[in-house]
Structure formats: C-alpha cells, structure tokens
Image 1 (cartoon, rainbow over the protein chains, first blue to last red):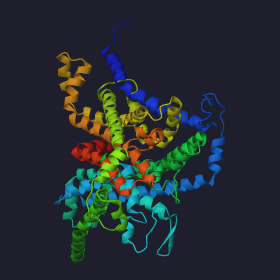
Image 2: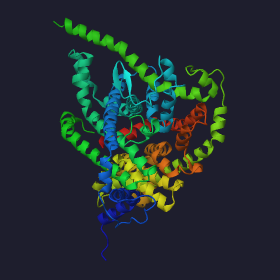
Image 3: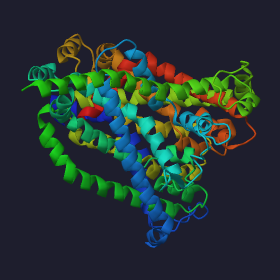
Image 4: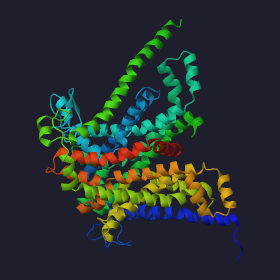
Amino acid sequence: MSPRTLRQQEGRAGLALISPTLVITLVVVVLPLLWAIMLAFQDVRLINIRRAGLFGRYTLENFVYVVSEPGFWTSLVNTLVYTVAGSALSIAIGLVAALALRDRFRGRTLVRASILIPYVAPVVAVAFLWETMLNPQYGIVNTWLREPIAFLTQARGEFLGVQVPVALLTVIAFEAWRYFPFAFLFILARLQALPAELDEAAVVDGATPTQRFRYVILPQLWRIIALLSVLRFVFTFTKFDDVYLLTGGGAGTEVVSVRVYNFLTARDDIGASAAQAIVLAVFLVVFLTFYLRFFGGGGDERGGNEQG
Amino acid sequence: MSGGEMSRDRFERGLLRVLKPLVILVLFVMTAFPFLYMVMLSVRDIQELILEPGSLWPRAFTLDTYVDVLTRQGFLTFLRNSAIVAVASVACTLLISIPGAYAVARLRFFGRRQVHFLFLAVYLFPAIVLAIPLFVLFTMLGLRGSLLGLIAVYIAQTVPVTVYMLRNYFETVPRSVEEAAAIDGCTRLSTIWRVVLPLSKPALMATGLYAFMIAWNEFLFALLFLVDKRESWTVSLGLSQLAGSIEVPTTVLMAGSVVLTLPIVIVFFASERLLTEGLTAGAEKG
C-alpha cells in the first residue's frame, strides 16, 4: 500500500470529524423523513404498525381521504392567512422598531431588552400569559373593554359592523407580537451596518426624513426583508405550538399542523397524519418557489451590491 | 423656491420628534407589560384576582403560589427534568458540532460543499413532519416517556445550526496560529483542543446557550414523547398540561410561568450580545 498523501489524510480527517454530525442528522432527520413519506402511502395505525413493514401495501388512499375532507381545505386556508398576515405584521413592526431604536437615547438598552423578551421567553409561558390576559372572566384586557370579548374561543364577531374572525385575528396578533423581535434584530443589525455617508449626503441634498427612508434606507433593506419574509413564512407555515397552545385549533383557527397532530394522537391514524404533513410540505415548497420566482429575482437586483 | 421643501422637512422632523418617543413607548409597554402582569399575578391569591381582575398591584403579596407550584404541582421534578435535558443537549451538541465545524471550516473533504445544503435543509425543515415517524419509532422502541429520545431529537435539531455558527467563528482564527502549534508537535485534535477552542470561547458560549434555549423552550416533541408519564414532564410540558385543568389556580400557574421563563431570560441577557450576533451573522449569509 502506498503511503497516503497529505491531501488524502486531510480528506479522511475531515470526514471523521464531520461524521458524528452526519450520523445524527441522518438517523434523527433524514431517515425519519423518508419513513414519513412511506407511512403516508400505507394504511397504518399504532396497533398494526409492526405488520406494516418496508414492503407493506402501498396505496394512495390516505391522500384521497385527506383531501376529500372539507376540514383540510379550511385548515389550509387558515394556515395561509395566518402565515402571510403573521409574517407581514411581524416584519412591519420589526422594521418600525428597528428604525425607532436606531439612534442612541437614554434607556435604549432597557427598551431593547424588553423588546426581545417575547421572542426569547418559552412559548408555553407566553401563550398561557395571553390566555390569562384575554380571559373573558378575569383577564385584564377585558376589564378595559365595555363588553368582554372571548378573544380565543369566539370564531366570529362584529367589529364596527363588519364580521371578523376574532380568534384567528388574535392568533395572528400573537404571532406578530412574538416574532417581531426576530425581524427587529435582523433589520437593526443591517441598519447599523449601513454606511452613514449616504444618509448624510441625502441630508445635505435636502431630503426630508421620509424621502431619506424611501430612497436611501429602504432600498438597502430590501434584501434582508426578502430573506426575513422567506424565513418567517417557512417557520410559520408549519408552526404548531402557538395555535395549539392558544386555541387548540378551535374557533376557526385550525391550521394544518394542528390537524396533523390530532390525526396522529387523538385519531391514531398515522397514514392520514403523514399524508397531511406531506401535503403541507409540498404546498410550502410550491409557495416558496412561487415567491422566489416573483420576488427573489427583484430583491437580488435591488440589493445585489450589499451581499453579506 | 425651497420654502415649501424646507417647511415639509421641518414638519416631518417635528412630527418624528413627537412620533418616535411615542412609538418607543408603545413598543416598551406592549412587550414589558405582559411580563409585569405575569409577575404581579404570581404573587397574589386567586381570590383577589377573581374579585379585582383589573388591578395590577396586589393587595397582599404572597409567595405561597410558588411553594404550591414547586412542591404540590411537581414543578421541582419538572425543573430537574428540564435541566437534565438542557444540559445534556448542550454538552452533546458542543461535542458533536465542534469537530464538525472545524472540519467544514478548515479541511477539504469529499462532500464539504454539500454539507451546507444539508444544514440549511435541517434548519428550515418542518418539525411537524418529523414528529410523525419519530412518534411511531419511539412508541415501537418503548422510548416514550424517556428523556433520552428527547435529547437525541434536540441535538439533531440544533447541531446543523451550531456547526454553522461555530464554523463562521473558526474561520476567523488565523491559520498561522494553528500551523505554529502543528510545528510544535500538536496533532490535529490537540490543536483544536489547545489552540482553536481557547480562542473561540465567545462562540462556544453562544452556541451552548442557543442549544440550551432550544432544549428548555421546546414543546412539540416533549408533548409527543412524554405526555403519558407525569414524572418525566419538562417545565414547558408541565405548565401546558396543568393550564388545561381547572383545579390549579391561575395565580399558581403564573408562578409556574415565572419559574419557566426566568432561567431563560437570565441566560439570554447574561449573554445577549454574543447570542444575537451569532444568530444574525449566521442567518444573514444563509
């Protein structure tokens, strides 16, 4: 055997060092994912799982069953509304917060710290906190209102004469409140990395604050906003915790991930549960492709020179 | 000619001068108030809350809520479980991601470029899809109710991100320092141990804290794997399960919320700068 070259040694060492990472992702993420896809094409319940092996009977029944249930399409629409509104609101508030906290002022550290808490705190704690604050009997928010509103258990309500989905809006508000710090952090980091000269030049040229924002600052933020939109969309679209903890999927807030969970545990229908999860993932990929096709290119052009 | 422009400028500046403090105030109240409310509810009796739901300041302070939640409701056990899960996750995550990040940062090996794609995929991958096969697998293996399986899932979910965070930092360690160590007779592993790690302390801290926060806050997998076995509940799971029952008073549960939230807030603010820089730097490029 010829002695190994340095390059070969390096290659071997590299593989050896990365292998624990690869093994754990393979065992806990990649293989289960493949199995999930297989489960979606089999008629399996926890009771008969041992019989449904690798070469079990494959069928499309789960998918047919799942998409023929009207509840599925309602939950998909809910998921989309929840995701788009929640992402957009959290990014918009995050942008406003980043602009407001861009310059130094007394107490900025305190305000900044306060802003980050909703994002950092455990979701179970903040969901319980919202539930308590919004409780119709003893919640503090309802003591401020003339008539108590069952924010989390009421599907429809009237606001200024218009029918509104109360619980869904509340869940969206929660989403915006909890995740705007995420957008805030990213946008603030970008804002503080912007060269000051451009802004100063605009001041010298007599641009008003809104003009400077519109023509100087915002164009430099498109890239990070586009990235945030993708990230928030991906995370929110498949999010389970928030809706499950706030409403349990009731009052017109059922999203697909909660349905997946209910099929898995309450109905013990693993196949249908997996089929819905796969359909959800496919829709996610479709929406993302759609988004990148229409906005990704534009965002790149506008922000191409500020990579990194 | 510029009179109109000037006045528009002055008007906007004036408006901003008023608006900005207002926006800051709203943001502060909207984020701080709920947590103030949480603490205030946790130190009063449930009777007081029912009688005066609108008052923020309790008439009589009590810490009985904390005693109740920690002992009678079993939060001491939940805290122990959460601590075990979080500490084990942090230790294993670091143990696995340090060599991995070093390899990606420094060594040329087959598949090095593809590794990034894998990490991004795991980072963006929906947990709910993964939940199904893992739930089935753990049921078959009889691992439901054991903390071990939960730890494995948390490690797998954090390792891709932490490898990424650490890699960014390792790349800033000058190669010449490592080469000097190699000339002094250090093997590759001892170079990592003696040279690279001591230089990367901030990044290691940030990575560890990230793993800690994920493990401490996580809910879905804890719910799926542990719900049948009360003595294995984590704090998050315990609070969510007790919140559904009517026997436990809300103020006692608020004490539980404080117990759940406080460690993470302390950990976060002790290391905030490290953590936010690590996270935003990592994702800005991704």
